[in-house]
Length: 278
Image 1 (cartoon, one colour):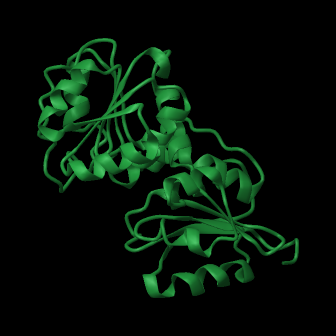
Image 2: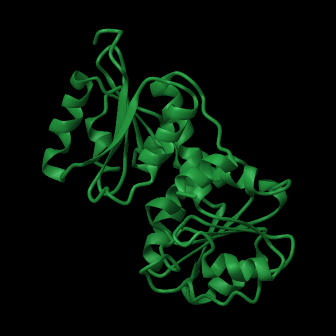
């Protein structure tokens, strides 16, 4: 690829029209005065391999990958980071100059950075975390929490077998409880995380007793539509520190942008407002 090409990046998924990533990366490109473009690309499963192998020839330096392709792209990559292998999914691809495709997963990084920026003095080692949900997002959250030193994770999922599978994979620092006991683990946790889509716009509400919420806890929801979910509303009223899910999206984008466009961007209040269209 000739060096004077304008670098291109984008996000691949199906559907893709709701993605906030183009607004996010476009804001950074514009405010940092960098050449480059970032576009949304709807790609169906049957075309995924052909598209990914073609993009570097068209001037792409990398792309983000979202539902439903995050697992499949691992098979197409030449190099996979340890964290992407651990998650069994990638959200960031880097097309290297030597022609190799490098796959990474920055979801866990984004989750932790969001907690650190969104709270005063969050200490992961201060006590156990309660995690609701055992899907793909939960894997990233659990791996990240264990990596930064959370001593124990109480995990509840509507289908217990999925939670048990994560316990087998991640080890004895995880304690699985039945979904009906989810209210009890909230009571015992220092950090509370909802990784389910319950409470999201258009989805059922999170029917978990929240009377165990209390001051001193940090409560976060990976959902960002609405920004303040019913869980976060209840946590705020209980005196908890709350962190909405938008910051996870913003922070997970930082490492990819830096690799593609050569400068490390910052997550600011102005960025949040731009992404929200305010």
